[in-house]
Image (cartoon, rainbow, N blue to C red; front, side, top):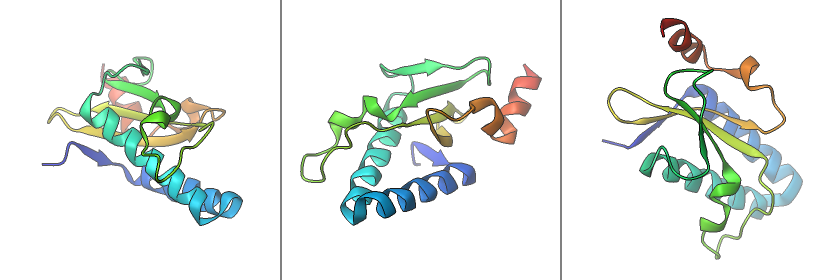
Length: 126
């Protein structure tokens, strides 16, 4: 069983981020950012409470955020590194132990306005 699942909203976020990266920095830039996204997701799937992650109990009982800058130096050199990644992952650990990536958002975005619906339901139920 995979260690993580990606929500439809997070899929859309990543598609948008990668399209912007390619428009701005070319195909190589897209590959660099894609490698960073993958590494960040694998990092939190491996250890949901890894250094750099933050508990976000005000959002949902098991919600956490993780800024991609914490994984930036862990991307292999052959792809290249993103100097100042502005995005973070919003995720939570599900009852089955899988990490669910709920959103991938820019650090300047208002998180409260971009929560997945089920995160709000989780907050209301606790």
